[in-house]
Amino acid sequence: RPAVPATRVERGQSIEITLAAPPPPPEVPLAVFELWRSARIIALFKPAGLHSVPGRTGGSVAEVLAEREPAQKAVAADRGECGLLQRLDRDTSGVLIAARDDETYAQVREAMRAQQVEKWYLAIVGGRMAEARSIDIPLARRQKRVVAARRYDRPLPARTECTPLDGGRHWSLVLARSRTGAPHQIRAHLSLLGFPLLGDALYGGLPAPAAGRQGTLLHALRVQVPGLADVSAPIPPDFARAYAALRREG
Image (tube, helix red, strand yellow):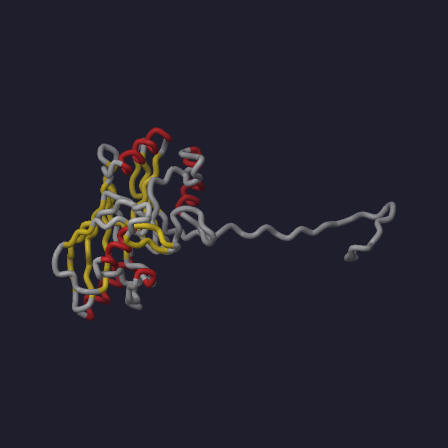
């Protein structure tokens, strides 16, 4: 029978303890897939809605990589990110690369610090961008956001080059290119230019079309590491549906 705290155990009695079942592991979407690999690099597709590295909720690309490639846990093991060399925000889709050994990890991280690694993004923004724009305003963290750095900040170097590819009356499809990697850089720079991403309420963006992705309309299209990797990620259906809906609206 169930015991109460004051129950005395007598000789010959047995005690049975029922433990609560452990919580189930976080549910990870199955949309993560390998784009390319070499002896030194693995490139993966990250869907929107999934963290790059373990967070407070949900699964992550790092967890998927650890399950599929257990040896990755030993790469830059002190970071616990299975060798991932960059991060994408939860609502951003696209290509993520991971080093397959510590030497490659250190080499690529140094190339990133030297601004030798180039990244391209597709972005759908509010407003009509009529011509190519570039911005090199340094950024600084402000709680959940990054903003233009001030004199008393520790600035994060950031430069983004933007080329409009298509657009309508109130939106533009933009190719953004960068060699720097400040957190939220593309989101913050587009907002500072006056063209916040659709679906990006944190940086002043209007809602995304109901027909497509319900989140930030940003896709990491391509990553190029000189001498090691040049990988592109296909445009996912939710991004394509949002673009198609905007084109129909004009």
